[in-house]
Image 1 (cartoon, rainbow, N blue to C red):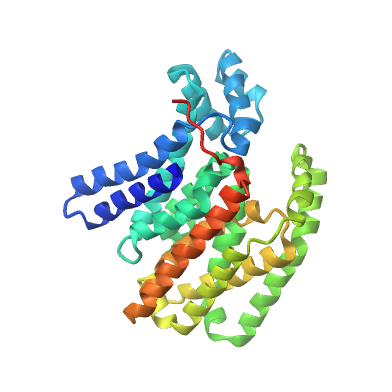
Image 2: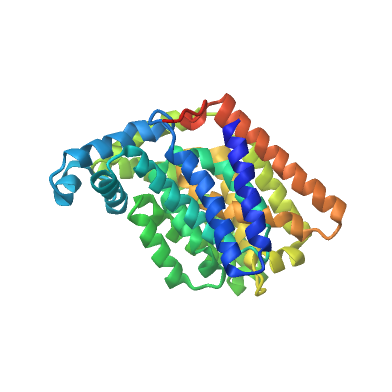
Length: 367
């Protein structure tokens, strides 16, 4: 199957890049790793990927019909960054598949840069494989939001060192591709500030307050989303997601993996803090609170869970890749590594191949 082959080839180049002794070799191997996945996405038929058909082709057609960029923006209500990429590919390269290639190039490159920054604490090829199995097929579907999430992930090292203003710039950059990036302010920055504060870290009382706030936020999601859809112009489109996702089966594999992540970090907390936040501190609190938040959200709330939690899913991939290194016993470490990879392979097959979520199977190329 072409997806698995490309995933493995990309991971192999990432492995070579992580072991390279000089910058040029690391750059060449990294570029090859990224391009394998970008070319696969760029050469796909326009029918591969739900949103490729829903708005990708439509936006490209509008770009072809527009006199200039101002005219184009008046024809489409999507974000300016997305429209700029589409418009330039249309006017200067003249084929829709160039646009598909550049969408992938931004997504994969930004994710890879974010992953490469953590190569000393997590396995780069393992993290890339996790991304491929969890999110790659969705990058053919939620194209704008996946670009936004990848940009935010690229700046994750800023939030780890509490450079919140700098991390905010990544959130704003993501906003130019999908407005939902603003979720990053409360979901990532807000959670991180609270979870890593000394009061929450060392006080049971404040931990209880934080947990209560979490419950309140979870209870408020549906009413707030419904109010937003009623008040904001054009937002009513998203009301159909409630019916679409509320009855969808809860993907048990991601929920189970998050539960395992929580338990491993709880039992190997000291080792986890060195891996998740190398400078020390209480960064593990952030991940543990977010695991609980996401588990409860996916099981109890469900409302547009794929869309709301996509930004934290990228953070979760990083902690998932770090888990085996939290365990010193090499046999347990290998078992955890093999277990994660097996579970995600099963999830990928069940969700994207058998379930045909995102409508990316069977793969069709323009060649």
